[in-house]
Length: 140
Image (cartoon, rainbow, N blue to C red; front, side):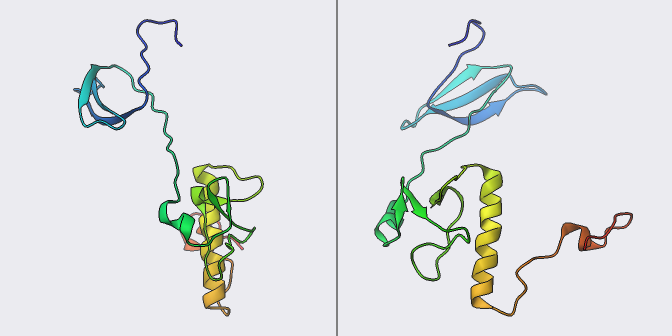
């Protein structure tokens, strides 16, 4: 994979610890499905984060499912009344499984749940610029 003999790739491992004196000197890794660890000399660490999602018992709750995830509409509503979903568990056309879009989906799901429970509550939350921070312009 790499031309340099100084680079070694270890998959599928989980980082269990990093040690060193001001710089990385060693990394302790555990192989997936194992309880034994391996300590490797290391002067740089590049992580590729990812995981396999699973609905677990949610798959049996009666949700409409697609590609192993719960189908939602633009307001994060599921096929079950009064249930919203967001993040990696949610599926819709054009879905990007990114943490940034997950945060936006969470904000939408919460706003819609609040709107359902308290219809008189304004849907749009305040802006961060409305906090009254000295020296900053206020939003509107």
